Image (cartoon, rainbow, N blue to C red; front, side, top):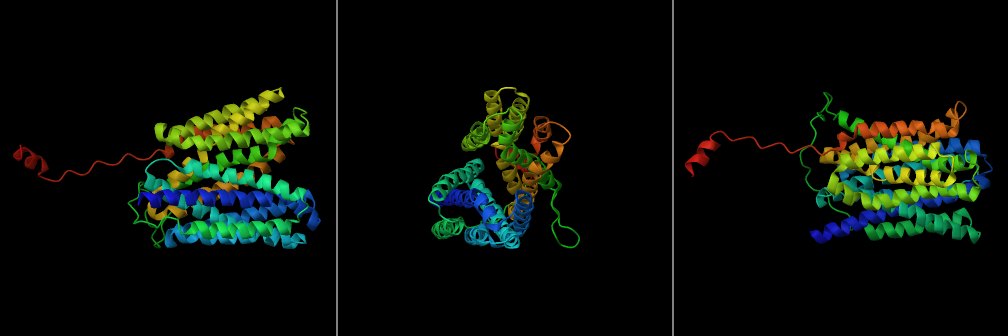
Length: 404
């Protein structure tokens, strides 16, 4: 049994890394696909919203399916579909075809995202200690690997269809190799919360706690989205950094986040998930404030790195809390949290753009700072509830007295 658990954990690492690699390979080839389809940046931005819409829909579909069929069934199927769908954008020759391809790819990616997180919740539950952050680190590592492989294939002048086709085949092979190691579902335990009563029509209502976790995920992932899209632009436009130096801003953020996620589980086991979220959000707020107000490029880079380190352990705590709340509805609850978080990831960059027409770019970063402060204040929501004391059986005291 212990060996099965270790192998199941390794398989979960594999699927997170595979998802990061597949998504990274798509991102690396965005410029080539944009050139192939003849679209401009503005239209590409609208088409990327279709990717997000498809992912959101996939998350809402896969969550309940994982609860009903088990993540062991849904994860391999989602991984196979996601691996196969990554080639579709490379085949697109028009904007319409690319839009359709991105909807399908986003849908499949959303299914894999939620189902593998639901399985990660199961692994963490059986381990009895925090392991979620390391899985998210594996996703980041998969993205780094994709950037290296993609850079090499582009230097060889491989077409997007050729490279993404090879990625699809490799993904299917990895999926087949890892599928059998996934854990089988166990009988669900009782809910840890008390709000998820069934609605009068027989459908279970989403508890208020889950919606609070989802709103926090939206705010934290909004911060990640801002860093992804605006960190390098901040250095180049506000501090007049050269392009090569400006690129280091995102590199500092992403590297610090990956390292932080590799360490966050051990820290969470010592101080608890609420402390990780509270202290991490405070550190992130301090880091982004430093980056926003710094007049010096080196200090701004340090600020972006501190921002990534602070955010690194926050989202995994939210996902763990959502899955822990009710083991019988872990997939659906995780889909709510991850779905709204994904909306935040997309909304962050979109909100910052219009704000720059009113205030300088660096001052717009106080919106994500406010989100971090809000998350720190509400961090208690991820604290595991204390187990209630068992009810005293009538006459138990007399029986103990008689037995002395």
